[in-house]
Image (tube, rainbow, N blue to C red; front, side, top):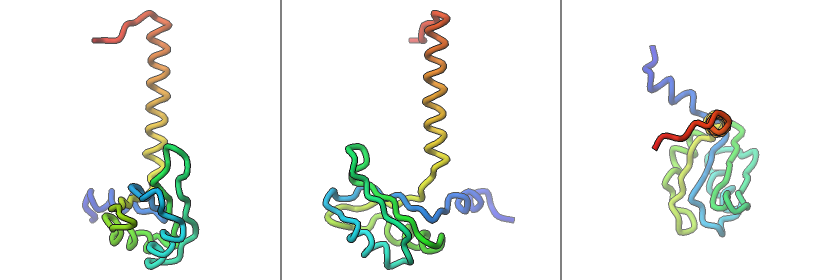
Length: 119
């Protein structure tokens, strides 16, 4: 039987990697050259908006290739920066959005019922 930590780790694997701490001058070609060593890449998306600069998503054809890339490239020195490579976790993003929505609803209810926030 698999241990609890093994089961949790298996659930986190994805074909999509999130890369952060990229030098703003890093190009898609740079990322294809580095990440392509570990398998066939379906897509790379570089963040270009104010809040997403220095980040990218790398989508592999195979999950095993993504795992190998993550294992080898997290902490890799690229264009004068040490990059951080993580599995993309949309469930975590959805949970954050749901929490923000619930906090807003709570604030509205408190205002409607004239309930002051605790100090």
